[in-house]
Image (tube, rainbow, N blue to C red):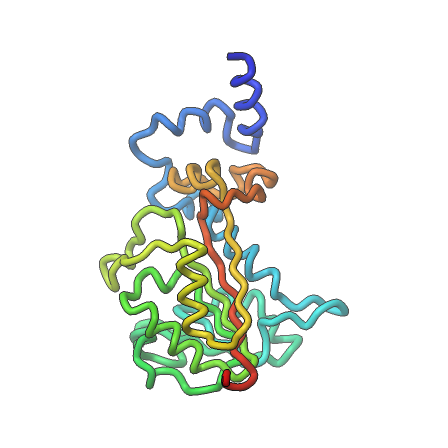
Length: 248
């Protein structure tokens, strides 16, 4: 018993605003502390991981030009393109695809699964976060994204592995899929023949549990957020580069 107690003490790190006892009790809760994914408490855990992934490809002055630049397309909005593309430094042009004109940021309106929606071989970088789970025909969507990239262009995708129901998206477009590193890798390999593909996942048992309960990222210790356990994938991310020339 003392050994178990020490293990709990090590894992349940003290963080601002949340006691270890409160976090220990989450296993006995029948309702989450937040039904807004943690948005009402701060930055959700899954968003923390999405930002960590995109931050890997952000430009850094006098260090790296990054991958998020040139002509950039973001699916659904421009939050991440504005944050990570640094248009004021690189002359980046940002487009936004949305399925209807209700989004005032949309520069392209249409269905991602329709191959005529996006212009061919146009974008240097496409950001597609948490979109594929609400699209039934994922293969068609990835084919459209591949076709819209210039040769050598890069697609940055995130999808959920462990999550609660996707609302309000479920009521508008549906809530169809959860992914694994293996399934996303296979889908990407089919969509990007001859291309360069990298898959990375984020999460562990503790962060998956706290995310499902609705705790925000600031309520989790950094070392707990950074711990990677491939058996508990909260977010799976893909970097796929289109081949410079068609495969033989």
